[in-house]
Image (cartoon, rainbow, N blue to C red):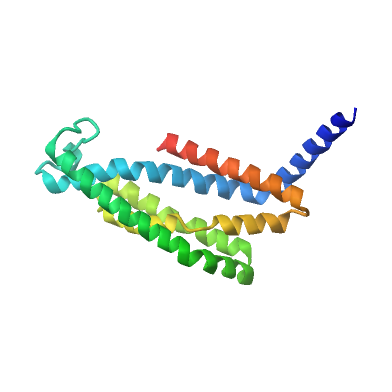
Length: 193
C-alpha cells in the first residue's frame, strides 16, 4: 500500500511541476524546433551554395543531393566543411564569452527579458536561410548569423526554472522534463527541415 501512495505523490508532484513550467513550454519548444530546422539544413544547402563557385550552372540547376559525384559537388564539400568549422568555432567562442554575461544580465535585469532577447536572436538566421533558398541570398549571411541562433540561453532557462520551483526535487524533475522537451522539439525541427 505505501508504494501506491508514493506513486500517487510522485504523479501529483510531476503535475505540479508541469503546471509551474507553463511559461517555459512554448519558448523552449519553438526555440528548439527552429534550431532543429536550421542546423541539419545548413550542411545540405551549403554544398549546393559552394558548388556555385565550381560550375557555370545557375543556382537552381545545382542539385548535389542528386548528383554527388559531379566535380563541382565534390569540390564544394571541402568549402562546406571549412565554413562549418569556422561557424562552429565562432559559436563556441560566443558561448564562452556570452554565457557568463547572459547569466549576469539575467540576474540584473530579470530572466524573461534575457530569454526573450535570446529567442529573438535565433530567428534572423532562419529568415536568411529562407532568403537563400528562395532568393539566392548569400549563405554567408546565414553562416554569420548562426552563432546568434545558438546563444547559450540554456543556463538562463535553468536559472529561471530554479526560480519557479520550490524545492530541489521539483527542480530536478523540471530539468528532466525541459531537457526531454528540448531534445524532442529539436528532433521534430530536424524532421520538418
